[in-house]
Image (cartoon, rainbow, N blue to C red; front, side):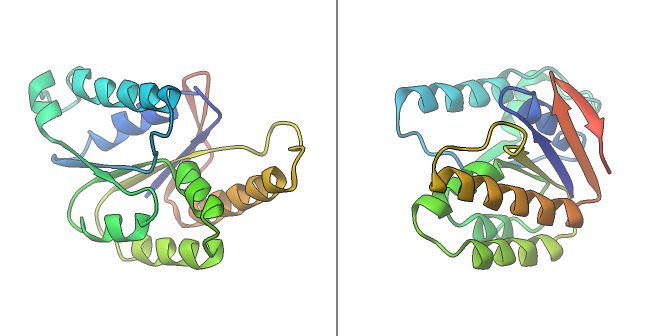
Length: 179
């Protein structure tokens, strides 16, 4: 398992895609975002287009072959279930922070959801790359909800980093190896 952390527009998703396509296709992309407005729809379309238009990888696949080997699963809430249904394929989860947002805003038990995620991750034998935002480096959020979310995200990232074989932090498109 690899955890790719970073701030907004740090290159996390692009780098995570590069990591997962080093493994045999098909690749599973588990999307946790929900398109509630035009801005988020545009972000999702950008991610989809990048996967569609990526150049060849280290294994020499051409653009069309790479596109044909991506399968997207939308899992804004049941991330553990989505991972469990693909036990033998390389998976890219993008991103844990958006999954956490859905849990928090829906009033779900964060501890139980994180434990369920940990259980399914511990049972995996195939590659998985998790993407998550590092939200604790900025100013202290003004609202109680914002502060609580920042704390929940920090705890989630710590728990995933403890399980991960590799942890990378993206800054300006450059990966820094933490573990």
